[in-house]
Image 1 (cartoon, rainbow, N blue to C red):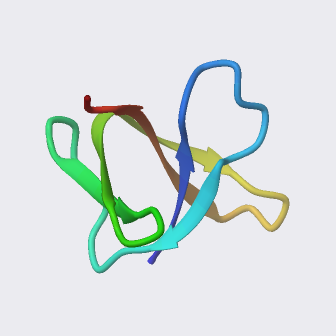
Image 2: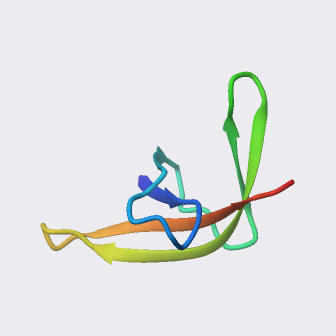
Length: 66
């Protein structure tokens, strides 16, 4: 399932569109490869938006976990 990932509220477009087996839930984290290092992002928000075809697109908001 494709999920759009937004890094902050100011993002008008997703930072990434990633493939997940299941939609991450609030409180979980996403680890992304950043050139051999893993960057960990906390999932802080989950929502769905309607696309032009009428189907729903899953979206998550994340914040970098220092």
